[in-house]
Structure formats: C-alpha cells, structure tokens
Image 1: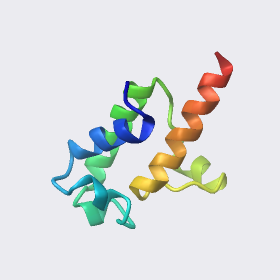
Image 2: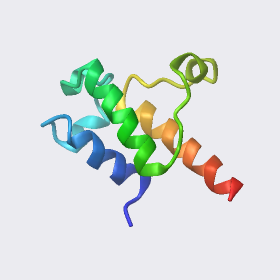
Image 3: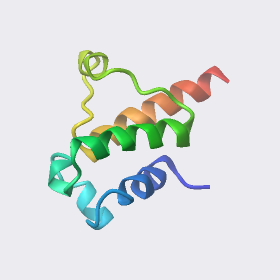
Image 4: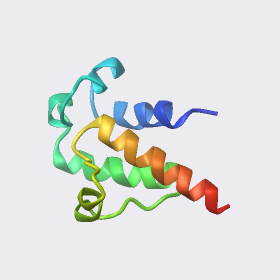
Length: 88
C-alpha cells in the first residue's frame, strides 16, 4: 500500500513531466508546469483516492494552509486523512 506522499506523487505525476524530487523544491504548481485546470483535476483525484473532501480555499487559508504547492497539498491531505481515520 502506498503512503500518502507516494500516492500524491503518483497523482501529481499524471499532470507533469517533472521528476518527483522537483515537487518538493517547487514553490508553486506553476513551477511544475501545472495549470489551474489541472489543479482542479488533481483535487478531484485526491478526493477520490483518499475518500476525503478538500475544503474551499478560503477555509484552508483561514486554517493556515495553502494549496499552491505540492508540499502544501501534502500537508493538507495528511491532516485530512489523519482526521478521517481518527473518526473511524
């Protein structure tokens, strides 16, 4: 079974040709040549893969999260998955 990080790498890799090690150095998805439409598709893929609902951007920002980069997404998804598993 893939870790959260590995699954996110796999999903993100479907939308860019950049090597996964670049994901962690990029300050934005644009640095990975991922446009806004692809980001929406990535969100859907993440929600489906992890059976979670990603909150609206304004809600994420109010909690100190950003969906602008791979690392930001990794932090959000990790927390959401942990919250979901603690409810089970």
